[in-house]
Image 1 (spheres, helix red, strand yellow):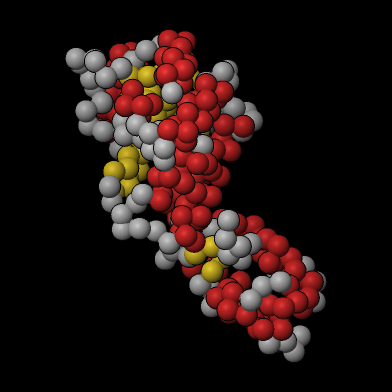
Image 2: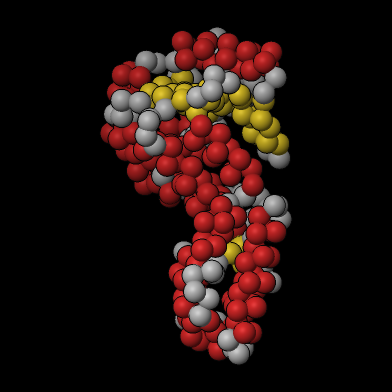
Length: 275
Protein backbone atom coordinates (compact mmCIF):
# COMPACT_ATOMS: atom_id res chain seq x y z
CA UNK A 1 0.00 0.00 0.00
CA UNK A 2 1.27 3.45 -0.82
CA UNK A 3 2.77 5.25 2.17
CA UNK A 4 0.98 8.49 1.36
CA UNK A 5 -2.34 8.60 -0.41
CA UNK A 6 -3.89 10.96 -2.93
CA UNK A 7 -6.33 13.75 -2.18
CA UNK A 8 -9.75 14.42 -3.68
CA UNK A 9 -11.24 17.88 -3.85
CA UNK A 10 -13.81 18.14 -1.07
CA UNK A 11 -13.93 19.66 2.42
CA UNK A 12 -11.02 17.49 3.51
CA UNK A 13 -8.79 19.92 1.61
CA UNK A 14 -9.09 22.57 4.33
CA UNK A 15 -7.96 20.08 6.99
CA UNK A 16 -5.00 18.93 4.93
CA UNK A 17 -3.92 22.47 4.12
CA UNK A 18 -3.96 23.33 7.83
CA UNK A 19 -1.89 20.23 8.63
CA UNK A 20 0.55 21.05 5.84
CA UNK A 21 1.01 24.60 7.09
CA UNK A 22 1.68 23.40 10.63
CA UNK A 23 4.28 20.90 9.44
CA UNK A 24 6.00 23.57 7.37
CA UNK A 25 6.04 26.07 10.27
CA UNK A 26 7.47 23.55 12.72
CA UNK A 27 10.03 22.35 10.16
CA UNK A 28 11.21 25.89 9.49
CA UNK A 29 11.29 26.69 13.20
CA UNK A 30 13.57 23.67 13.63
CA UNK A 31 15.84 25.07 10.92
CA UNK A 32 15.29 22.11 8.60
CA UNK A 33 14.83 21.91 4.85
CA UNK A 34 12.32 19.51 3.30
CA UNK A 35 15.08 17.14 2.20
CA UNK A 36 16.48 17.10 5.75
CA UNK A 37 13.11 16.36 7.32
CA UNK A 38 12.48 13.64 4.77
CA UNK A 39 15.80 11.97 5.50
CA UNK A 40 15.16 12.15 9.25
CA UNK A 41 11.75 10.47 9.06
CA UNK A 42 12.43 8.07 6.18
CA UNK A 43 10.59 9.82 3.36
CA UNK A 44 11.70 11.53 0.18
CA UNK A 45 11.84 15.31 -0.19
CA UNK A 46 9.08 15.24 -2.82
CA UNK A 47 6.69 13.53 -0.41
CA UNK A 48 7.37 15.99 2.37
CA UNK A 49 6.70 18.79 -0.13
CA UNK A 50 3.49 17.12 -1.27
CA UNK A 51 2.22 16.86 2.32
CA UNK A 52 3.03 20.49 3.06
CA UNK A 53 1.18 21.54 -0.11
CA UNK A 54 -1.82 19.32 0.83
CA UNK A 55 -1.30 17.18 -2.25
CA UNK A 56 -0.87 13.98 -0.26
CA UNK A 57 -2.41 12.62 2.94
CA UNK A 58 0.16 11.75 5.61
CA UNK A 59 -0.12 8.46 7.40
CA UNK A 60 -0.09 8.37 11.24
CA UNK A 61 3.56 7.31 11.37
CA UNK A 62 4.52 10.28 9.18
CA UNK A 63 2.91 12.65 11.68
CA UNK A 64 4.40 10.88 14.70
CA UNK A 65 7.94 10.92 13.30
CA UNK A 66 7.67 14.52 12.14
CA UNK A 67 6.38 15.60 15.53
CA UNK A 68 9.36 13.98 17.24
CA UNK A 69 11.99 15.28 14.80
CA UNK A 70 10.85 18.94 14.79
CA UNK A 71 10.09 18.97 18.52
CA UNK A 72 6.39 19.82 18.21
CA UNK A 73 5.58 18.33 21.59
CA UNK A 74 2.62 16.30 20.34
CA UNK A 75 0.93 19.12 18.44
CA UNK A 76 1.48 17.51 15.02
CA UNK A 77 0.75 13.98 16.25
CA UNK A 78 -2.54 15.25 17.70
CA UNK A 79 -3.78 15.90 14.16
CA UNK A 80 -3.99 12.18 13.36
CA UNK A 81 -7.72 11.93 14.05
CA UNK A 82 -8.58 14.84 11.74
CA UNK A 83 -6.28 13.49 9.05
CA UNK A 84 -7.81 10.03 9.37
CA UNK A 85 -11.27 11.42 8.60
CA UNK A 86 -9.90 13.50 5.72
CA UNK A 87 -8.40 10.34 4.23
CA UNK A 88 -11.78 9.28 2.87
CA UNK A 89 -13.99 10.97 0.25
CA UNK A 90 -16.68 13.19 1.79
CA UNK A 91 -19.61 11.16 0.48
CA UNK A 92 -18.13 8.04 2.07
CA UNK A 93 -17.56 9.81 5.39
CA UNK A 94 -21.14 11.08 5.41
CA UNK A 95 -22.55 7.64 4.64
CA UNK A 96 -20.32 5.96 7.23
CA UNK A 97 -21.52 8.40 9.91
CA UNK A 98 -25.14 7.54 9.12
CA UNK A 99 -24.41 3.81 9.13
CA UNK A 100 -22.81 4.08 12.58
CA UNK A 101 -26.01 5.75 13.86
CA UNK A 102 -28.25 3.04 12.44
CA UNK A 103 -30.05 0.55 14.62
CA UNK A 104 -31.07 -1.31 11.48
CA UNK A 105 -29.69 -1.32 7.94
CA UNK A 106 -31.19 -3.00 4.90
CA UNK A 107 -29.66 -3.11 1.43
CA UNK A 108 -30.47 -4.58 -1.96
CA UNK A 109 -27.61 -5.10 -4.44
CA UNK A 110 -28.18 -5.93 -8.07
CA UNK A 111 -24.84 -5.61 -9.89
CA UNK A 112 -22.06 -6.26 -7.37
CA UNK A 113 -21.63 -7.24 -3.73
CA UNK A 114 -22.72 -4.60 -1.24
CA UNK A 115 -19.78 -2.60 0.13
CA UNK A 116 -20.25 -3.82 3.70
CA UNK A 117 -19.94 -7.41 2.52
CA UNK A 118 -16.92 -7.08 0.26
CA UNK A 119 -13.48 -8.59 0.82
CA UNK A 120 -10.48 -6.31 0.27
CA UNK A 121 -9.59 -8.18 -2.93
CA UNK A 122 -13.09 -7.80 -4.33
CA UNK A 123 -13.20 -4.10 -3.43
CA UNK A 124 -9.82 -3.49 -5.05
CA UNK A 125 -10.93 -5.25 -8.23
CA UNK A 126 -13.99 -2.99 -8.47
CA UNK A 127 -11.95 0.20 -8.20
CA UNK A 128 -9.26 -1.06 -10.57
CA UNK A 129 -11.87 -1.54 -13.30
CA UNK A 130 -13.37 1.96 -12.97
CA UNK A 131 -13.36 4.11 -16.10
CA UNK A 132 -11.87 6.69 -16.34
CA UNK A 133 -9.14 4.88 -14.45
CA UNK A 134 -8.09 5.79 -10.94
CA UNK A 135 -4.45 6.37 -9.98
CA UNK A 136 -2.86 3.93 -7.54
CA UNK A 137 -3.20 6.49 -4.75
CA UNK A 138 -6.90 6.97 -5.53
CA UNK A 139 -7.50 3.21 -5.55
CA UNK A 140 -5.81 2.83 -2.17
CA UNK A 141 -7.86 5.69 -0.74
CA UNK A 142 -11.18 4.30 -1.96
CA UNK A 143 -10.37 0.76 -0.84
CA UNK A 144 -9.41 1.97 2.63
CA UNK A 145 -12.58 4.03 2.88
CA UNK A 146 -14.84 1.13 1.96
CA UNK A 147 -13.16 -1.27 4.34
CA UNK A 148 -13.38 1.30 7.14
CA UNK A 149 -17.17 1.35 6.74
CA UNK A 150 -17.25 -2.36 7.57
CA UNK A 151 -16.49 -1.56 11.20
CA UNK A 152 -20.27 -1.35 11.59
CA UNK A 153 -20.37 -5.16 11.50
CA UNK A 154 -18.42 -5.37 14.78
CA UNK A 155 -20.03 -2.30 16.31
CA UNK A 156 -21.65 -2.65 19.72
CA UNK A 157 -24.51 -2.44 20.29
CA UNK A 158 -24.79 -4.33 17.05
CA UNK A 159 -27.23 -2.98 14.46
CA UNK A 160 -29.48 -5.41 12.59
CA UNK A 161 -28.03 -5.82 9.09
CA UNK A 162 -30.02 -7.37 6.24
CA UNK A 163 -28.85 -7.77 2.67
CA UNK A 164 -30.49 -9.06 -0.49
CA UNK A 165 -28.08 -9.90 -3.29
CA UNK A 166 -29.06 -10.78 -6.83
CA UNK A 167 -27.93 -14.25 -7.82
CA UNK A 168 -25.82 -12.79 -10.63
CA UNK A 169 -23.66 -10.93 -8.09
CA UNK A 170 -22.69 -14.31 -6.62
CA UNK A 171 -21.74 -15.72 -10.01
CA UNK A 172 -19.98 -12.80 -11.73
CA UNK A 173 -16.21 -13.42 -11.25
CA UNK A 174 -15.14 -9.81 -10.75
CA UNK A 175 -11.40 -9.85 -10.17
CA UNK A 176 -11.15 -13.53 -11.14
CA UNK A 177 -12.52 -16.84 -9.94
CA UNK A 178 -10.33 -17.04 -6.84
CA UNK A 179 -11.40 -13.55 -5.77
CA UNK A 180 -15.02 -14.61 -6.16
CA UNK A 181 -14.44 -17.86 -4.27
CA UNK A 182 -12.95 -15.99 -1.30
CA UNK A 183 -15.82 -13.52 -1.51
CA UNK A 184 -18.35 -16.34 -1.26
CA UNK A 185 -16.46 -17.78 1.72
CA UNK A 186 -16.59 -14.34 3.34
CA UNK A 187 -20.36 -14.21 2.86
CA UNK A 188 -20.75 -17.62 4.51
CA UNK A 189 -18.72 -16.40 7.48
CA UNK A 190 -20.57 -13.11 7.91
CA UNK A 191 -23.91 -14.80 7.36
CA UNK A 192 -23.38 -16.83 10.54
CA UNK A 193 -23.47 -13.70 12.71
CA UNK A 194 -26.72 -13.36 14.66
CA UNK A 195 -27.25 -9.73 13.69
CA UNK A 196 -26.62 -10.30 9.96
CA UNK A 197 -29.04 -11.83 7.45
CA UNK A 198 -28.04 -12.40 3.84
CA UNK A 199 -30.66 -13.37 1.26
CA UNK A 200 -30.29 -14.32 -2.38
CA UNK A 201 -32.73 -13.19 -5.08
CA UNK A 202 -32.89 -15.99 -7.67
CA UNK A 203 -32.63 -14.92 -11.29
CA UNK A 204 -35.67 -17.00 -12.28
CA UNK A 205 -38.17 -14.85 -10.34
CA UNK A 206 -40.96 -13.68 -12.66
CA UNK A 207 -42.07 -10.85 -10.34
CA UNK A 208 -39.52 -8.41 -8.94
CA UNK A 209 -39.93 -5.18 -6.95
CA UNK A 210 -36.29 -4.18 -7.39
CA UNK A 211 -36.31 -3.16 -11.02
CA UNK A 212 -35.68 0.44 -9.97
CA UNK A 213 -32.13 -0.49 -8.99
CA UNK A 214 -30.13 -0.95 -5.81
CA UNK A 215 -31.19 0.73 -2.59
CA UNK A 216 -30.22 1.08 1.05
CA UNK A 217 -32.37 1.91 4.07
CA UNK A 218 -31.03 3.10 7.40
CA UNK A 219 -33.25 3.16 10.47
CA UNK A 220 -31.45 5.49 12.86
CA UNK A 221 -31.55 5.05 16.62
CA UNK A 222 -33.59 8.24 17.00
CA UNK A 223 -36.43 6.65 15.03
CA UNK A 224 -35.71 8.39 11.72
CA UNK A 225 -35.44 6.34 8.54
CA UNK A 226 -33.46 7.52 5.52
CA UNK A 227 -32.70 5.98 2.19
CA UNK A 228 -29.51 5.99 0.17
CA UNK A 229 -29.25 5.49 -3.57
CA UNK A 230 -26.17 5.45 -5.78
CA UNK A 231 -25.81 4.81 -9.50
CA UNK A 232 -23.23 5.89 -12.06
CA UNK A 233 -22.35 9.51 -11.23
CA UNK A 234 -25.23 10.07 -8.80
CA UNK A 235 -25.17 9.70 -5.03
CA UNK A 236 -28.34 10.66 -3.19
CA UNK A 237 -29.56 10.63 0.39
CA UNK A 238 -33.35 10.29 0.61
CA UNK A 239 -35.12 11.78 3.61
CA UNK A 240 -38.54 12.70 2.20
CA UNK A 241 -40.98 10.52 4.21
CA UNK A 242 -43.09 9.63 1.15
CA UNK A 243 -40.05 8.53 -0.85
CA UNK A 244 -38.64 6.61 2.12
CA UNK A 245 -41.98 4.83 2.49
CA UNK A 246 -41.79 3.73 -1.14
CA UNK A 247 -38.30 2.33 -0.62
CA UNK A 248 -39.41 0.51 2.52
CA UNK A 249 -42.32 -1.05 0.65
CA UNK A 250 -40.09 -2.16 -2.21
CA UNK A 251 -37.45 -3.58 0.09
CA UNK A 252 -40.05 -5.51 2.04
CA UNK A 253 -41.37 -7.11 -1.15
CA UNK A 254 -37.83 -7.84 -2.36
CA UNK A 255 -37.03 -9.67 0.87
CA UNK A 256 -40.28 -11.61 0.70
CA UNK A 257 -39.51 -12.85 -2.83
CA UNK A 258 -35.89 -13.77 -2.06
CA UNK A 259 -34.67 -17.05 -0.59
CA UNK A 260 -34.73 -17.23 3.21
CA UNK A 261 -31.41 -16.57 5.01
CA UNK A 262 -30.96 -20.30 5.65
CA UNK A 263 -31.75 -21.19 2.04
CA UNK A 264 -29.46 -18.42 0.87
CA UNK A 265 -26.44 -19.65 2.82
CA UNK A 266 -27.04 -23.13 1.43
CA UNK A 267 -27.22 -21.63 -2.07
CA UNK A 268 -23.95 -19.75 -1.55
CA UNK A 269 -22.31 -22.91 -0.20
CA UNK A 270 -23.42 -24.76 -3.34
CA UNK A 271 -21.98 -22.07 -5.61
CA UNK A 272 -18.67 -22.18 -3.76
CA UNK A 273 -18.54 -25.95 -4.21
CA UNK A 274 -18.99 -25.56 -7.97
CA UNK A 275 -15.90 -23.38 -8.31
